[in-house]
Amino acid sequence: MRLSIERKPIRINPDPKRVIARFFFNGNDRAKDVIKLVMEISEEIAFGIVSPILQEYSKRHRNITRILDRSCSKLKPFFAELGIDYKSLTEYRRLLIGSYFTHEYSIESAAFFNPSIIADPDQTELQGGNKRVIISFRAVGEGHISSIAFRRALIDQNNNITVLPAGNYIDEAEIVRNAVYNRKLFFQKAAVTQINIDVIKELETKLDAHFEYSNLRKVILDSQNLHESQIEKIEYDKILWLADSYYEIIFSLDTDISDRVIFPISEYESRGIEDARFVEFRDEDGSCVYYATYTAFDGALIMPKLLQTTDFYHFKMMPLYGEGAQNKNLALFPRKINGKFAMISRIDGYNNYIMYSDKINIWGKPILLQQPKFTWEFIQIGNCGSPVETEHGWIVITHGVGPMRKYVLGASLLKLDDPTIEIGRLKDPLLVPNSDEREGYVPNVLYSCGSIVHNGKLIIPYGVSDSSTAFAEVDLQELINKLEMDTAG
Image 1 (cartoon, rainbow, N blue to C red):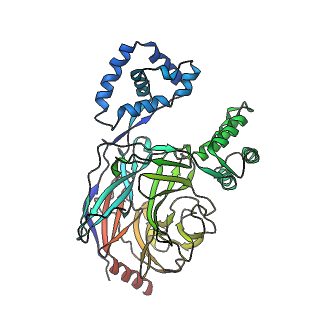
Image 2 (cartoon, one colour; image 1 turned 180 degrees about the horizontal axis):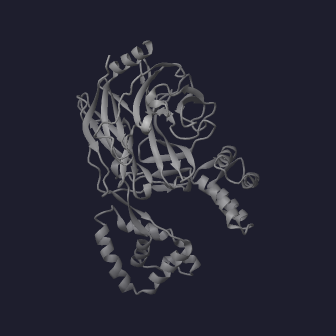
Image 3 (tube, rainbow, N blue to C red; image 1 turned 45 degrees about the vertical axis):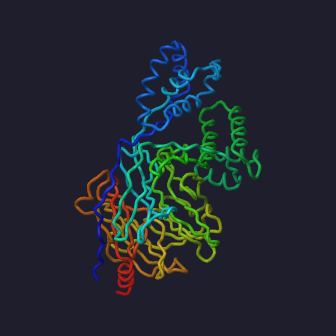
């Protein structure tokens, strides 16, 4: 039996015109020098410089005055050091100073790939057989910094996919840091991130079992003042960087989902947030929440993290803990199994593991699930998003890496009530790069972070050579039959 998979005639490419205006900072001394220079010019000259800036950039950003004002407000400590009363600044001088500390960043100028897909919470006013979906992407811009971007799409009764046009403006979310930290878990993560153990032990003794960000910051500043070495002070800064990995972001309600971009915020994700695997999670009480596992990267350290939302306006982020929360490639099952959360991971970089937990952010005791078996996956095997539930079992789209580091997609079937048991695995790849897909930023790579079932078909969005995104579909029953046949054979 030969399995037929259909490539869809649709490709989503990066759009370098989609830019975000972000705060720009290049050091304390230079910041104060710039502030002093702007303060020396007359009000008339300040107005003459900033007025055309507002006119030019208002066409590119939703509220450029708010953006520039926000950039200026982040400099308040420097105004205080310079003996300048921030409240006495005129509006145009404030905006001009903010403009010197703001730059445009093209979110998706380099690549737009590694998609995941879920049903949109809003399925109202649709014709029968149609489904509205949200697709997340890894968007790569200047400096190879990755962020999470979104598009909304419609799948009709014939499984034709229409991706809705992206909005004209990109919005930066309001950041909220109001987390209460568990001391034991927090410093366990600090040890994993290789922060100086003496610093960890010192701070543990100075904090309560549960503490807030403001408490931690005060303790750290007090401790830093006792040291002269810049190297020692950086170790204390690393603790704050870890604390910054817990945060909430809130987007304005008047934004389109394509305007909402989750950009790296904490130091431990400064080089990018990668490969979000979104899943619609149904709890035992019938409630629904959307989770995404993703990888934070600071240029050296990989930190698995979890994102949570119910409406795609308000997101909570936190690190994942435990021996199973290592490396990349974590994917959450869409419901509890036998009363526990379940996750697939690739903690050693080569094999698939499965693990269970009572708490969604703590993962231990990984169990080996799959090892490379076929020639096209000898280098490594991993998941391509959360498992898809069917009456026959859990379908897991996998990626395999073989000769010449070619990435291909495969598929496996796991037992429904005990997914540690593999019922079947395709002997041959489900999808391989064709001649139109093998060229790109990283050649010979197909990769996905999630699939969805619609009208009896499994729809798989996939990244093409780490550059753009395409779509394919396969008949669900045919896939299950092939999985069972390959195993029986």
